[in-house]
Structure formats: structure tokens, C-alpha cells
Image 1: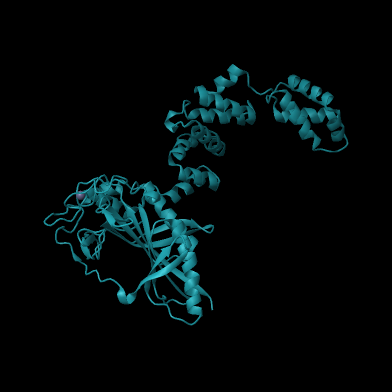
Image 2 (image 1 turned 90 degrees about the vertical axis):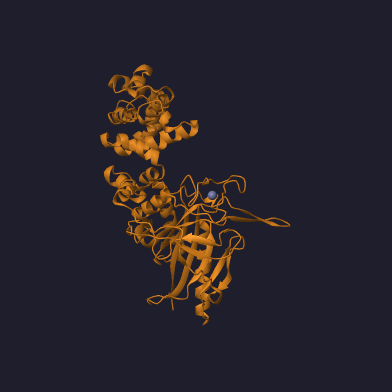
Length: 474
Ligand SMILES: [Zn+2]
């Protein structure tokens, strides 16, 4: 019997806000331990939380970016548990009335567009961080109370690679929407994975195994690549899987059991008494709606459709938004957008990277690239000379036409001048000339190359080819 995996993901993302969720402390990574703390985020008795409006907006915005809906009313709840990283002994979260419901993420996977449905997105707070030293342990509460968004997917994923691509797509969307920086190194994104297996063709879900708290997408992929065959092996051997929580040991490359269902936590959720339910006004919703941006996949598809770009170019402009915006400022006027894309990607990007120039600091106006493409397409200069012109444009900011004039780079389309180069080349290379006459047509390319070399790249290549052929056959 064949088995298939059923995977759902819970993705936790730190929101890009200036301050924490319930207090005015800075939401900043990397500060010395316990320097961004106050009575509220330390959970001292008698303090009251005040919800961060921007965090609520970013949560609602995420709901819209994921094609979900915003319920008329959301509320906060207490999730009770005891652990040193949470000074209040409860976490404020959204239990049964989250800020955003439903939706989906579309992403490219295995040469098609895959869709994973989103169950909900809810707002909660991050916890502190435990540090263990040789003789004692410490807790840094700088992270306690940082706004944390949890995005729960439906169990629509079927394998490790698909989960990996979904997470990347989700991350791109959140970065596009300025919801989160999603800096993995700084732990801004963490995932819990739910995975079960079942015989192919059956509908009933197998025992759900949760793998907790992974902080890299490649870790998720490797954990699933280990866990799925493990579960299939267990059921194939006639054993039963039981619902449990496992831990991914990245160094050993294995998952190991943490606790089974019998020991599952009872969080005793109840409505947070210190916070009013949140019912956004129409004006508030409209302001959030105005922050919805074009999604990464839609941008890529639009670049392919509107400018007839191949997928890799569109992908580059999806990943490098400022570069894509630069391209798009000139592309609508271009007769040959693909050539414009080549200059922007292969030359402009290479030069700005090499010289450490910001895109805004490029000396020539963007239209100069259109001019350069016209010069090549119109046969005024060769592609090789165009490279030289581009380097000069980049260094001086001068327009391509002015550079071609000043340096005398215009292509030689004067038949007499080209003829002279051809005569010289045939005289200097009697061997290849004889080869061509004997039927080795490839020899013509060599001779043409010599004409280009002799003319320092200025001879019109098509004219050089025709002239050589005429002379050799004549
Ligand atoms: Zn605080």
C-alpha cells in the first residue's frame, strides 16, 4: 500500500512595529539583555496592557494579502502556562475570534501554481528567551511582548519541498507588504509543523504529529524529509502512531518525541479581561485596505505577460523590487523590453554591485538605456561596442549618442571601408580563405571575427559577412 503525507504549518512571524504589543518598549533585536523592558512586559502586578494599533493593522493587512476576510469583531484571550520565558504566566493571544480568517497562498511548485488554504491569522505576543550557562541560566525579556503573528495553514501540503516553497512564498508576501522583515537570522520567523500519513486514496487523517519551533525553512524541509518516511515505516510495520509532539534535532538530523497526547497541555484559555474586544471602524479598514500591495507572484506573472520577459528575468525583478521598478519606469516605452531587461539585469545590476552604487545614485537617466538599445537595434553600433558605451555611460552619466559621437564608435556601414578590411583579412589568412572555398563554411566565421577585430568592433557584422562571402566566392 502507498502512503501520502498530510502537512499543515503554523508560522509565527514577528511584526515590524516600533514598539511592543502592549507597552511602549522598543521592538528591537540585539540590544543588551533586559534593556527593553518595563512593568507591563515584565508582567508586574497591577499593570494594564494597551494594544498596539500598528500591530492590529499589520495583522489585518496580512489577512487581506492572503485573500482572507476581516471579521467585524476580534478579541484577545489568555493562554495560561508556566515557563520562565513568560513573566505573566500567560500569553495574550486570540483564541476563537482571530483578526483574520481564511484565504490562501498561491506559489510556484513543480511547474505549476499550487494553492495552500489559510485557516486564520491571529495576533499574539512573543516570549522572552532563556540562556543557559555553565552554572546557571538567565532570561532576556527584550523579546517578551513583541507582536507575533501566527498564520495557520490548512493541511494542504503533501511533501517536504512543497512546505519549503510555501514558506518562502509566505515570507515574500510578508516582506512585500512590509508586515515583517522576516529575518531568519534574528529568529523573526519560526514554524510548527503538523504532519500525518494515510493510505493514498483515503480521506481520514492519521495521528497528528507536531514538530515544534523550527527556526529555518531548510530545517522544516529536512525535518519533514525525515519524519514522513519514519511515520510510513511505523504504520507499514503494523504499529500505531499516536498523537504526539516531537522535537527536531538539527545536528543529528532526527525528530525525537517530547510528549504524547496524554501529557498535552491544558492552557485553560479565557477572554483577556484587561482588553476590550476589537471592532475596527470602516475608516480603519479602508486605511488598511489602502496598504495592500501587488503580490510577488502576481508581479512576476505581470512582468512575463506585459513585457514578454522569460521567467528568470521576471523572477529577478520579483526578487529585486527596486531593480524591477527601475525597469518598469522605462519598459512601457521600449520596443524591445527583453533587450532593456538584459541591460538592466546583466549590466546595470553588475555595475552597481561592483561599485557599491545605490540605484538612485546612477548618473545616467534611465531613458539612456532605451537610447542604447535603439542604437544597437538600429545597427548604429554593435553589441560589443554597446558594452563599451554602457561602461562610459555609467562612469560619466553621458547619453549614449553623445558617447558614440565623441569616441567615433559608430558602426562602419560604409561598403568601401568594410571592403578594405575584408581584403586585408583574406590576404592575411590564406588558409581559412582556402578552406571556405573548399566548402568549409565554418571558416567564414573565423574570417568575420578577424574583420571585427581589425576594425576594433566597428564593422557592421552583417555587411562584413556578406562582403567576405562575395569576395571569396567571386
Ligand atoms: Zn515593556
